[in-house]
Length: 210
Figure 1 (cartoon, one colour):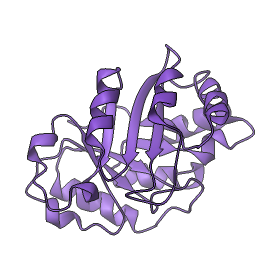
Figure 2: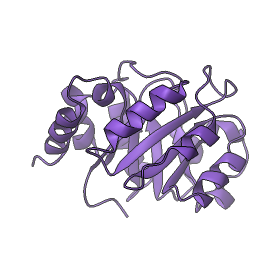
Figure 3: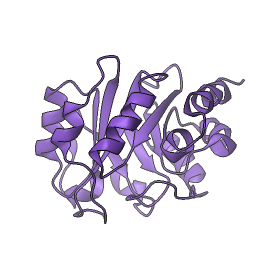
């Protein structure tokens, strides 16, 4: 089922424990959920804080979702779900040609911009995530072709909840929402702003416009 209300999800991608602590504290002041990126320089270039550090710094008022941009995500994904995370996102590309059916109830699958969705058209995804940048770093520009890919998702996976990650900002948020996405991961556009809470509230209003 598609989420009834669009959700803005502030994101953190960092290799510094002190930076993580500072950002999570700020986000907890205005959001009920946070998206944590985990990289280990395997599936994509880049290294973030250790998963254990992220799990140690969990404000009790925040829900967590973890995004594993790693070649072998399952052990870590199970760990965060056991610790109370609401969602563990793993990349379909990490599984090669493996059948995803046995994992679909437990994990949310992410798809890179270059991945052809038709390959997966026989799966009945209820939730999925599209990368709208090439994964690995915050602050990248939104890939315009993602709009077409969202429409494609709506056709291939009717009723699925579509999360978008990468390059989302107030200037393009409405177009992404109108295309059919309903969860929006926003990193630098929120946490890098001079008024993160203000940007967050403005983005919620943008997604609620008729």
